[in-house]
Length: 537
Image (tube, rainbow, N blue to C red; front, top):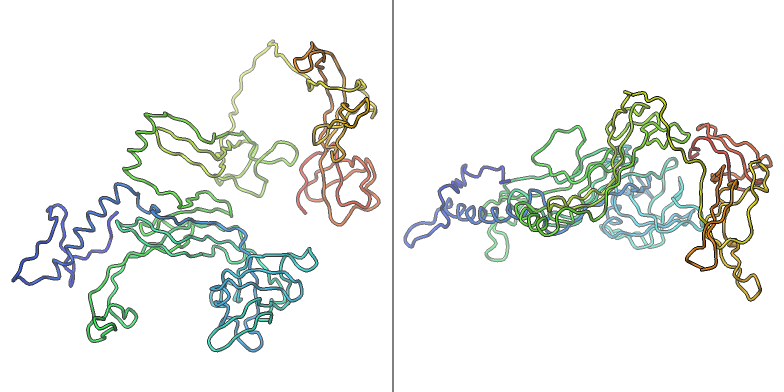
């Protein structure tokens, strides 16, 4: 894509026309050099560079990374505007520029300052420091600064003719709601192919939502074309032949193409002056271009042709598809969404819709690299037509069958609920007893093993000899009533009512279950016969 700015106007008169095939400007002795000819000679060279660049790179492609990063945990602390009679906005930029570490005077929590907002920039009108926490407090538990506590700088803060000494207080957290979590996107310094030019993009960060972290934006590069003239602001365009700017001798103007990281609402129309890199909806990444790999143009077609002829179609990381219910009934249907949510396709989840969820993956199709970095789901209406088939026989396999060996002893068989017929299911393999006794090779329970479920045995039969021990046999173990336990963690600890077989019900979710063994005075319990899905809090 060529530049949009028309330079064939006064006073530049750049009348370059590639259809005329003028490849050089030939200056002659005795003839005056025209400004038009000097400008046109640059356009000829630029046109050649643009054609070469267009063969290799697509518009907006990174040339030299570069790289973008989405930070959904962009912590911040809001501070009073004045501290010890000094406006904090006068020196908070120094903290950001030097990545100064700070500490909570009360909590002992430490953090590094990475960004800031002044009162005029903040939507809630607070001076704000964006930070990355380094360590928890002196109590080993507190992880964030507290409301109303003083903040200490761990390095000197030098600004203007004033200095805040290291280990001195420089700010105070506001009294209520001082800590928040926002979201941001950052881009590293890199070179991008834009409008036929190789444009330098500086390292920068754009804050998406200042105090919440479920943003919905398009993030990318905003492109600006401008003509820069010699002014007091751009004093470098004055004659400096003597080593300094001569303000009575303004020089030639400059044409500039720049790109800056910025955000746009999802509802904003397409903009030819905007190169989209990332798209986020409600905090979930829908499109992500890390800007670390160039996006080739015609050159990629040549590479794809060679790759396809050599290797055909293949995958590097396979794509998997999982069919899920759209509406989660909070019992056992594995639905993706709850009643108050919308699907990725902005539909209301219901029993009439199922979701085809595709995982991330990478493949080469016709030689072209197809990379999908995140899972996504597509809504599909369930088929509701049916056809009856009568008097048809269907084979049914009942129960759970396991093939086992290296057994010691025989399990009790039975269909009653008595515990003598139950076996424990562990979270890890058995271990050998060891030692030098007669039972040193016996398989026993690991001391660190945790019981995660139970089952009952209704049949135990011997199969033919296996190939492992020669004289050993494989056995078939048939199970019924296989139950996995649900581990529930609470705070504060359970009271005396959490005895074995006590009934537990979630206040908001309605999920329920029975405690396996007494959890009196404990912060966790194992539940069996669980129905539904417990919620956080």
